[in-house]
Length: 225
Image (cartoon, rainbow, N blue to C red; front, side):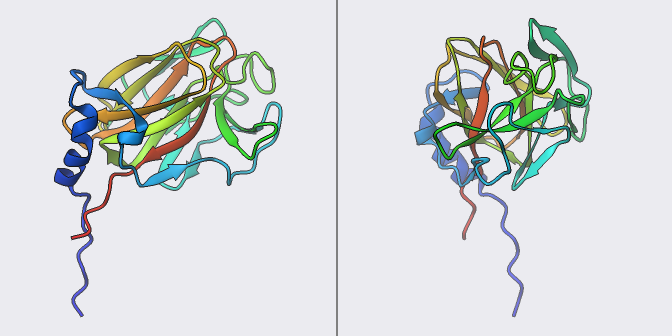
């Protein structure tokens, strides 16, 4: 039997799937209705060990199926905007390199009271387990494979705003988008030309109560031909 060659994602198929969602967008990454995106993989965090209150803190990069989670990328600078993390500057590359925050200032998995939901939060400079730090730290995500589109939910917004920086595998910036005012929101993002070059993103926020990340969705349909 001749081994079947592993097929890469079909860029033409992905472009067709994403065309309607991004048709009216004139920026490099379009904010779209997440329900218009055909995404095949979801990270809910619900299968991860977590706890109530301040959560289960992680001082290291969190590696899950298809993506890794940290604070920022190597080469970027971390500063403060009040109690909130601000991530600026160019990332180093290639390759793009994800890094965790300092001890007590990285990530935590928090179990939401009254639900079966676990969410991911970034911890700010006040440090774990202080309430003033919970949800106010940066969250960086690096995908195993470059993406043309993705979606996620933001939890706990109180009318504030968030910023999402999208990066390529070589560390170069694609675009930075501003989101808000925020509540309990679902967002979809699509490259305006269907290009599969989103290697990662950095999420920061300026919401008084901080924000949590949930239900990260990515992965275009594979080429099954």
